[in-house]
Amino acid sequence: MTDLNAIESSDIVDARGSACPGPLLEAKKGIGKVQVGKTLEILSNDSGTKTDLPAWAGKVGHEYLGLLEADGYDRHFITRNK
Image (cartoon, rainbow, N blue to C red; front, side, top):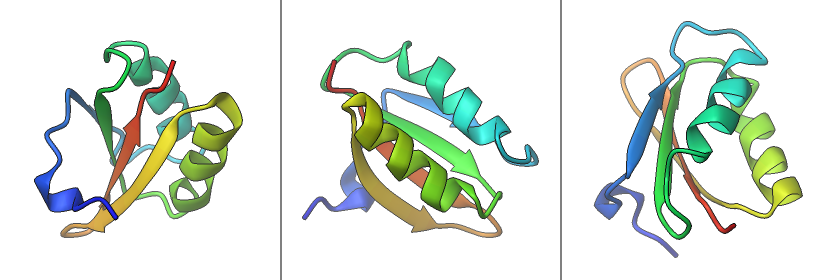
């Protein structure tokens, strides 16, 4: 299991304050900015993101590593696989 606290994100997308599907759309744009094998961090306080991001990552072939709860928002981590 990956220690999410130890991950160094290559890029961070701040989608806090954005309602569904905003965080997912921001993640789709952001993943293209990181190299294959690197990790994108998405900040979101939208509850739908907890199901949207893992489903999208699996569908398109990226690896959803999980989330860390922060103060009023979640930090999601996705590694680009292609």
